Image (cartoon, rainbow, N blue to C red):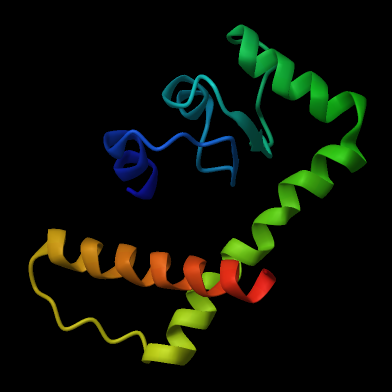
Amino acid sequence: MALKVLKDLGVHVESLRADKYYGKSTLKEFPNSTIYLIPKLNALIKGGKRWREMILRFMRNPLEYLEEYFKREKAESLISWIKRKTGWVINKVREERIHLTVLARVIIHDLYWSKALD
């Protein structure tokens, strides 16, 4: 959902690191971004040009690729941080309000981290 919101807002994403639940469609949705995906176990090199390039980048230099991919660890700590700070209680009923609340918490987390790293 966050990817859809970014796309709808017209936010330029330079690079994206995603887990195995994202796939070739992510490459199509962000044509000007560098995408780092760990392919599913049964993934094939067949596919579009960007998919093949990504797989080959992974195969040629796996350490460099994985180093970039695991930069997502900071982003993954987001859920844990939000749970500790807010107790993860979301008192909303409508689905779109739940998503908006979670998205707002994600943005607050990212702003906190960007200030902490300055």
